[in-house]
Image (cartoon, rainbow, N blue to C red):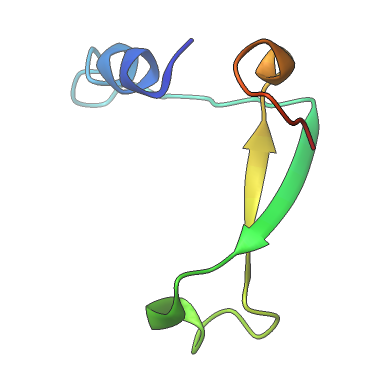
Amino acid sequence: MTPNGFRKHLRNAKKDDVVLFYYSGHGSQELAPKEFWHIEADRLDETLVCYDISRHVEKTI
């Protein structure tokens, strides 16, 4: 599911609905934008890595 597909899916939730996001996979880190360094002590953001990432980028993590 793409990020836009994920957002569209979540927008279907109605008042009092419960939304559960369960992720089991790999994560990574990337340099946080400078404006967030004050809340990211290591200056890194955590990310989710989709199972099929290698099909969409030349260099995988």
